[in-house]
Image (spheres, helix red, strand yellow):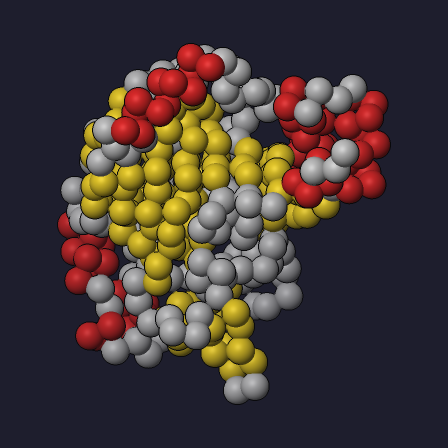
Length: 339
């Protein structure tokens, strides 16, 4: 259920005080500051910040230096940080994503909400890759081989040259942004998205978007990675324009919200999410969460909220390939600006 985030003037005052003393930090991706393939309530924080602080986070693509070399990437374009992480990090899995963090946000406690303002996302390297393999993706039986393609990126024009005559506009975002699960769950696989967020692969979560995640452990323990220079919703072949990114995030704690599910907000739309192994169930969850939001934030009856979602909301499949499927409902803000 999506619940109101800030319901009292006192909460607004507390957030303003946090912002007044806010600091900016930088967190680089090193063998000591990444978690490989999991979110874990027992993970040791890589950085501790206050509510209101901003962190510039460096992330790494999830492919080996050997794999990139074999695909044709010159040695001088393979990041030293990636080489170090592959050489030194032995605690891996059960998933495959290299995630920077966790970031411990002071004051965040179970029952709170962590607001993550995605202020800026920069390309870190001049290429991305896309790959598929037999038995994976949305068409697991169609290709009885694997293939990997290196795709040049142009940071000046913010485009990718997929092939002669095919140029793609870039919209960088992080496929995985999440918090630690409840301690009873233990170490959680970074692959399927769930109540913690995680590998949502939602192409709407670009710079300018705000993500809201429920807090399940003290400090929230936020991790981020799986950088994408761009992606079609659904990520059909199991990868996007996979690349290394640098993200600038501001973290704000909202106390005692009772939220239990991720959601987001763009400059132009509200986003309700749903995740489940069954895409139909994922869609139903996203729709129900949108109705909850409209009832709580816009003071609508559920009947009117249901009708409004049908005539104005856009339902999209965001994740098809990582066990749990993802869906979201986008509700345009502009419709609430009338008399």
